[in-house]
Image 1 (cartoon, rainbow, N blue to C red):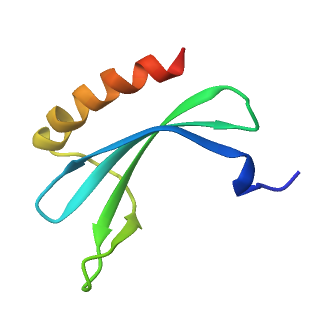
Image 2: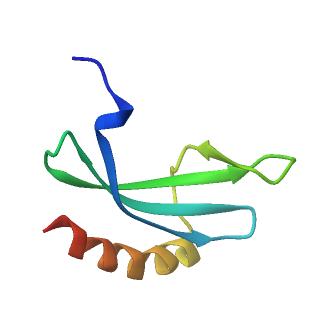
Length: 78
């Protein structure tokens, strides 16, 4: 069964804004299934629009910034 974006429900999404990009913490449930946490990075295009970027490693500031967001996201995983 291929992925269907209409079945992907975003339950929570907040971000930590860094100097050049942001780290997004989200909770999704696909097809009313298990709720899952997603952490992603968004860089900025030359026009200032967010674009997906590989998360990879995080700085201490980023970790400290997303830590409270992850704690808040936990309430949506119940």
